[in-house]
Length: 236
Image 1 (tube, helix red, strand yellow):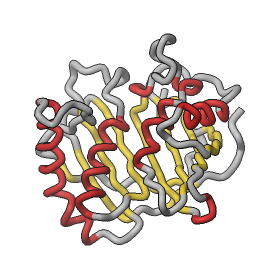
Image 2 (cartoon, helix red, strand yellow):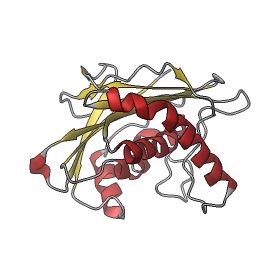
Image 3 (tube, helix red, strand yellow):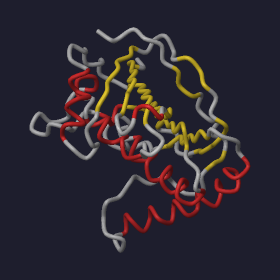
């Protein structure tokens, strides 16, 4: 059963800026690879649109990306939202020297894609989302980090087939980067999302996340630990 505790997230920014280029997924290929070059071009073009706005937006910052996929793409398979959000958030953070406290996204068969940013305003978690809490002291690069999160979901029921909304609040110390926590955290959510391949332990069915909110809160007392609040619900 989910833990019944309060949870505050940040309202998503309004995505009203149409992107001139289709969003690109994170790429781990060499710099000369076409996928990496297309990603670089996309980030540069999007940065030109957003960096002047970031400079004029007060803290805390919220970023929103709405990914429009072509009709022949299965929205619920692959095209993971966090792999769209991470390279954009990382690029804008590096270029602006400012940290986002909320990064959210959606994906749909909409064709056009939109982006937006604003001041991040706290809002209560929607009541239809169930919530779990976790705490980990391990490095996000280790198996132990994922295991501690998965253990916190013991007894959780897998969400029904279909699209999913996921909200995660990361509470960290001020010296820690929260962008590096996104992927290993979602990789540990197999008990909620289901596993795409039983032979691959940390490969949940995260392609079916069509609404994703990632939020960061700071607590100087937590050191290098991470406290997590994870909320999810079926969108059917």
